[in-house]
Length: 236
Image: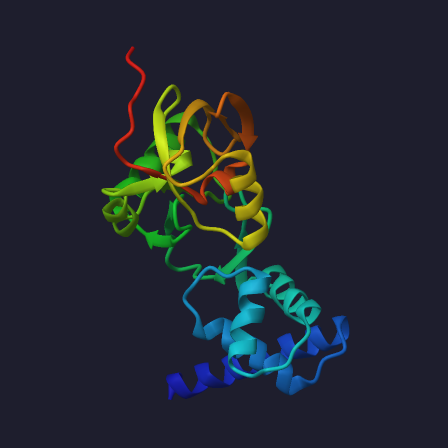
């Protein structure tokens, strides 16, 4: 009996969400329900464009502005929570689970986001705040690194962002769109070409020297330049 009552409450909540969305943008109720259903069906941490792409893959015709309005509304009312990763301009959205707090592992190579929870870690944080007399409102933990799959690939090659300062390496490949690939190739980033990493700071531009010229490559673009893993590191 309780399960049936919970279903009624859930359906009423979804109905109210659609009512609110229809006040913000001109959208049919059926479309609102489809956007909500698609968001609930994914366990990924999606951007507006990614959810829009999932809807198009289901042959659901909906304007991007409607998708953004819906996700912003879901976040405003506590149906979802949004956050932004280091190095990304777009916000990401995930289901809000108030009963179960979790944190995130973010792979800087493939951008995969994995959730994790650790009771011991939460207890340690609570104890630290208690010792400081600090009353928390909310908190989040994001751990940036390299996932197991990308670590396996790094046995043969790795993104330019992973090469330490002072190292000399050879270009393996550029995995990007045609325009960026041409621009980088014109600068000298050609398979087999040696380069030296002058400066490499987390999430900042990577300064490299190629063919006697120095270039500052944006962090996102540098992640698309792959280097042979056998590089020569600077001796300290």
